[in-house]
Length: 94
Image (cartoon, rainbow, N blue to C red):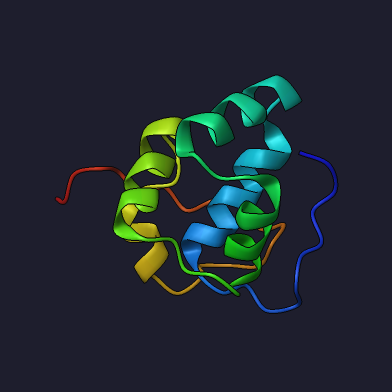
């Protein structure tokens, strides 16, 4: 995907998790995921920066493509900074 330029403030848990997933994934995997999501790199960058909130269909596509960034993460405030460890949030409610 290239370089990520992260803003000082993390806009949402979804943005934080998507950035972490992209950084940890090999380039071929992130390119394939973007193809399944149907977004180009500039749109993904705008989602991570908080400039653009993904639609319901895009949230679902991101969830399916990454199996790490779930639909509800985009509605949650960030649970840490950009480099902080991820808090485990299972798909199912307890």
